[in-house]
Amino acid sequence: MDHYEIENISLSYLQLSDYQDLKDAMVQSYRSMEEAYWREEQIKSLLDKFPEGQVVIRINDKLAGCALSIIVDEDTLEGEHTYKGITSNFTFNTHNQSGDLMYGIDVFIKPEFRGLRLGRRLYDYRKELCEKLNLKGIVFGGRIPNYHKYQESMTPKEYLERVKRKEIYDPVLNFQLSNDFHPARILKNYLEGDPASNDYAVLLEWDNVYYQKPSRKLANKKTIVRLGLIQWQMRLYADLDELMQQAEYFVDAVSAYRSDFALFPELFNAPLMAEFNHLSEAESVRGLAKYTEEIVQRFSRLSVAYNINIITGSMPLIKNERLYNVGYLCRRDGSVEQYEKLHVTPLERRVWGMQGGSTVKAFDTDCGKIGIMICYDSEFPELSRVLADQGMEILFIPFLTDTQNGYSRVRNCAMARAIENECYVAMAGSVGNLPKVHNMDMQYAQSMVITPCDFPFPSNGIKAEATPNTEMTLIADVDLSLLKELNEFGSVQNLKDRRKDLFELKHISPDKSK
Image (cartoon, rainbow, N blue to C red; front, side, top):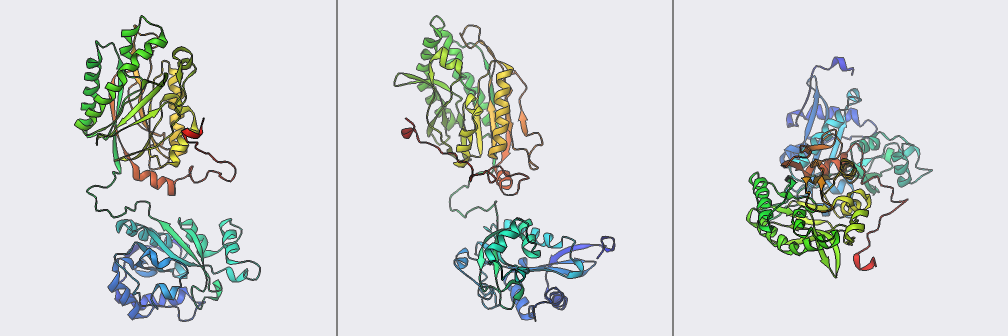
């Protein structure tokens, strides 16, 4: 049918009154198979059991195609199964409304309406229904109608691989692969009376990335997460109490907007080094380290009191007489975990004698898995890839840069981390100057929330950004479900398309790194 002849296209539930039109359409669609049409009592059974799963598409009020399906338990697909078996001898008694998978029984388009992408509309409906019913996915046995041409020279598995490589055209399999279905295994003796496929089929699967495992817990993991970033002004404070009073002000501000996280910059407590300015730079930063334990305790109390997860930026810590740059994740349930700066800059090493840490770890939170990398660490892509392999969805980067050059390095690398790891990145830095603190005289920052660059996200990869070099907060929502969609259906799939046959990344645990 030519496009100009189409007056309307509609999708609707199948009705028993449609049966004669349905039968005629099936006879025309399956001319190579004798009596390949459903009986009226079988259609009635499907409609009684699962009316939402049976839909027809019409063009100019004429039935043009149909999709039939049932719901089954995943366990029923273990091992081999046949079309006759999965439909319980065509009675559909295998349908289980409490099952976890949609099983495609039939999809067809009348020959005169083919080429109009109507099949895609039927599959799109199935996917939407699958998501609505919170099922794990869609499965079915796909025919391979061109296999009979090659059955003497190759196995079904070889045929499947060549179709995937576009060396052989198969009208059914090519269509399914283009609709995001992936082959799971070959089914032998699947459909009796299908000589074109030599009775073989390919079990095809589509995964519902929005599936939520049923839980009796009070609350499931959030999908919309609110991030609160503090762009901290460096200024002199009389003492620790005054510095923490300012920190609490910002925690209060972002928690008032029901933020799930508050992110502070790297070495935000550097103003307290003014007390030690009469000492050398190395002695001064070690003096600052004496405040770290108390600051962490106060942040932990704030996280509980304000019901917010706090990422404390970073602070100096002396361990076994060595100086490290560390930060803390203070969860709102009262638990605390430490993260370390793994790569220290040449200046930190030369002036302060700072050492790099050894632990790479993604953290569990009530808003999913997160990663935290301090400033310079963001410029080493291997670290974030390890965190991505551990399930990281949001990467937090507390940073401290004195020049726009340094800031640009962190920002550009952070944007690359978001793309290559299919995650959100939140980065927060300090602004202003500290004329009475050696080695900390000026800062430059523009805090921001970064996304991958694909259709569900901003085209430039920037969700929100602060005003440069101005003390302020930045609050932005990120949708974790979009990351799942990106991973499955993105224009590019950076995580999936890695050439692991050519290279691999190994994470060496700290006890084996020495």
